[in-house]
Length: 367
Ligand SMILES: *Cc1c(COP(=O)(O)O)cnc(C)c1O
Image (cartoon, rainbow, N blue to C red; front, side, top):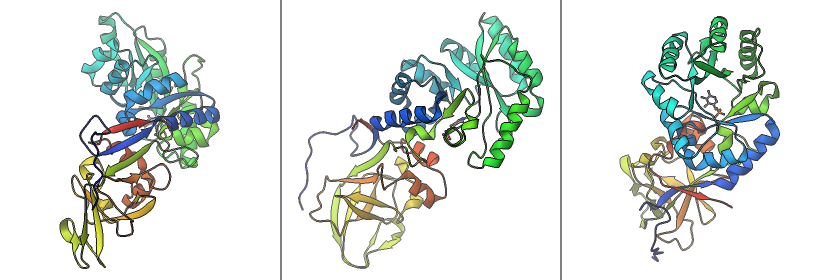
C-alpha cells in the first residue's frame, strides 16, 4: 500500500480533517440577495455565522453593503466590534441586565421584548448619561420573545419619546415562514400593532431569509437574512461549506467481518475499509451511521459502521489505487449537502451546520 506523505498541515492545527469555507460563494450569494431583495439587509450571524466564522465573514459582508448585523448574544456582538465592524449590531436575543455596560461600551443595540425591561434600562442610561440604542420586538405569534401585539401601543409611545432609550427599529419574527397563511396573519398583526405609528426614520422589519426571498411584501425597511447567506436551503444560492478528511488507514477485511462499535455493519463480501479522523465530536451526528456517502476520487463511497467520537470508516472497495493521505469529501457544494443529512435526521440544515464547528479547523478559500 502506498502512503502519500505530506510534510505540513493545511490548517493552523494538527488535525487532518477540516471544514472549507468558500468566501467567493459568500460574495456571490450576498450580491444575488441584494439584487433580488432591493432593500436593506441585516446579516444574521448568530452562532458564529451559523458555524462559518463570524469574524471572517462579517468584514466581507460589511464591505459588500450589509447595513447591520444580527447576533444572538452580547459576546457575539463584542467579537464583531473587535473584528472591526462599524455598522449597527443588534442583539436579537435576551441581554442579561448586567451586560448593559458591555453593550454601552461596544455600542450594541439591544432588544426590548417585555415592558419590565424599560424602567431599569432607562435608569441605567440616566446614570451613565447616555442614550441606549434599542429595538422593540413585537410578538405576533411566535410566543418566544416580544411584547404582545395586542398590548404594545403604550410601550411604543413610551419608547418613542424616551430621553434615555433610542428606538432604532421595531420588528417581529415569523414562526412558520414557509406557511404563507400564518405568515400573513402575523404580518397583519404586526401592521395593526403599528397602525398609529408613523415614522419614516424608524425601520420596521419581519422577514427572515425565506420571507425576504419569497414574499416581496414582507420586505418592509429591511430584511434579516441568515441561512441564505450561507447558501443553504435555496437552490439558486451556493453552499459555502465543505467537509473533508484524509485517510489514515486502509485495510482489507474478509466477508462476514464487522466494522466499528456494536457491529451494525458486516461485509457482504471481501472489502477494503478506509478510516478518516472525523467523528461525532466534530458535529457529525452518530445517527448518520451507515446512512451517508462521501466522495473519493470522484466516486461515491458508503460510510460503514457506527460513527465514533473521533473517526469513521468507509467502504472503498470500488476505488482504484487508494492511498493513505488521500482526501475524502463528506460535504460539498453540489451533491453531498447538509440538507440531505438533515432529511435523514429529521431536522433542518440550520442545526447541523452550526454544529460542524465544534472541533474542526476551518480553511477559508476563494475560487
Ligand atoms: C435567526 C433569525 C433570523 C434569520 O433567520 P434565517 O431563517 O436564517 O434567515 C432572523 N430573525 C431573527 C429574530 C432570528 O433569530
